[in-house]
Length: 130
Image 1 (cartoon, rainbow, N blue to C red):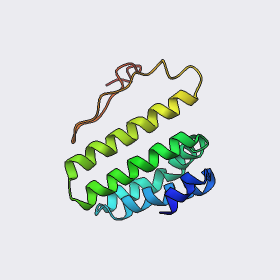
Image 2 (tube, one colour; image 1 turned 60 degrees about the horizontal axis):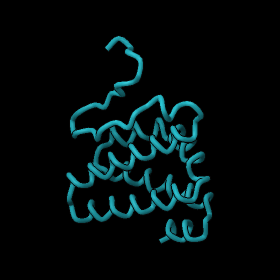
Image 3 (cartoon, one colour; image 1 turned 30 degrees about the vertical axis):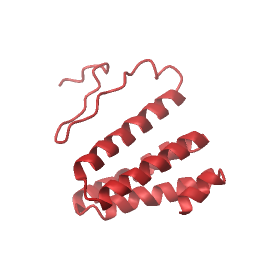
Image 4 (tube, one colour; image 1 turned 45 degrees about the vertical axis):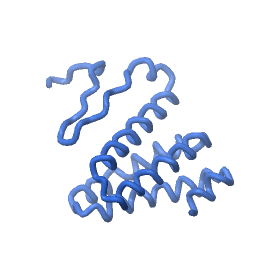
């Protein structure tokens, strides 16, 4: 409810704070302590990304819609769909961020969704000894 109000009122600062809490809660209650701790160790980097993205109202509105759908699938215990939605959420966030950086949007192609248990590698990135 508070996130919806922040979007409706175009309060980017409030949305950014609530968005951070939403993600923190997902990791806190995911049932995987190692994953939660890993997220905690990089959260400050993710927050700097959110700070940049949240200045555009449409990003916040889209993010909220995605969050609501993710929560609905988790409540329904549709884990496969939740995983798909999470991958889409991260992929769209990555794309939105790259569009903000001059010269990078065309350097990266949209990667196909990651299948559970697989790692995504950007085929256009330089080979780093893989």
